[in-house]
Image 1 (cartoon, helix red, strand yellow):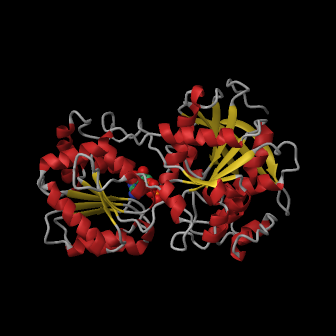
Image 2 (image 1 turned 135 degrees about the vertical axis):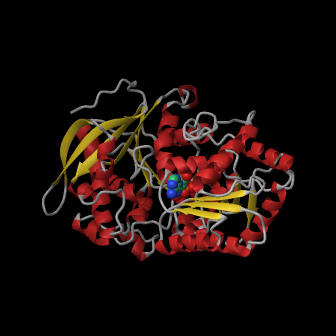
Image 3 (image 1 turned 180 degrees about the horizontal axis):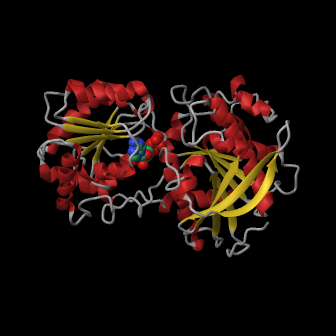
Length: 492
Ligand code: ADP
């Protein structure tokens, strides 16, 4: 059944494939990218894409948890996904995010658990192997053949791998692939049995360590036409043993076809001037009104209205990657300084417990919310003074960009995309935050002491806030770089 498209046949067809996309389903920053970059690409001026408009579409699994959120998706087709024990039926539905067509893939392995991800890697393996193979079958079933398959992270990496296995098939021969790595250590380890159950052959790539031939992300990396990651600095870091997760040698060999493109931010969705979650919208001209958001947030969280103390915020997955343990230890050691703090995040039970213990130690100063709450996060970006982001590694990081857009000054570790977006300096007019080098409480503590001292100079602080608010972190520039890459790779 052909899917009707009003876009010119000359349009370059790009299919994004990922596990999550905001606002349909959001677990982390991946969804911010897949929910916004395709729309930014679709609205690029064709003059900037060699005169060819980009017909970008997105495919994600039809996770059971999102079914009630999409009232009446359009059924497009049912088709089979090959499996040694007999084909598994898949269905594809169509919905939209604004004007972006989004395909939703359903089938028994997707139905096996409710959320986007399971704790059980075998179940994840079955779901995402099925999803990846179904993407390829879907393009044929709906008669929409992409020029570029742009897959994201391990969950869709086997679509790229499967595409290579089908290169003799005329339907797939002219489709080129890009695989974007949002988080290298998450390679899909633990899914080997699931891959074998679908009879996916290992990669047999001598450039990979042996285990890499059996895990989805390196398997996709071994065959994709182009590799990208989400910031220039992270693209360099992953060439080293400290960040390469065992794939640094392979990545060095692929350096000529790897690039680092900084993620952008959806400037419409993240806009303090029009954000409906805020008590008091504001912009650069009305930044003095921002204080009302801080007051309201302190009240909401049950903290006293100490407006002269900086309000520190942490928003993110409670994971060792994010250095939440470093933030907690640092605050235990800085009780001599004036600050209040709010933590919002979910994840590792031990880290959640450590955050709660900090709250118990300083009940007047610290509030911890162990949940995922998009609206609260917005009120925190708008009311917090300082964002703590002491990541051990950070492929790009969106929280620091959102914070800057909302006038919250980030204190971040100098790694990956944090290094590419935060400028440290003594002149507040040209610096938008604070960088520190080591993933230790001492290093964060020293930067935080400096920030807390600077906070007392309100004129300088406002200049720093405004410096961050003025930066254009929108997709405009990066979307053009992706568009050039698509044009370069495309066969048609
Ligand atoms: P990552 O992708 O590694 O999780 P990023 O900084 O790139 O980290 O993106 C995280 C995104 O998820 C940001 O938009 C952040 O605001 C949001 N986020 C993370 N945890 C929560 C939470 N508990 N509640 C609401 N939003 C959250």
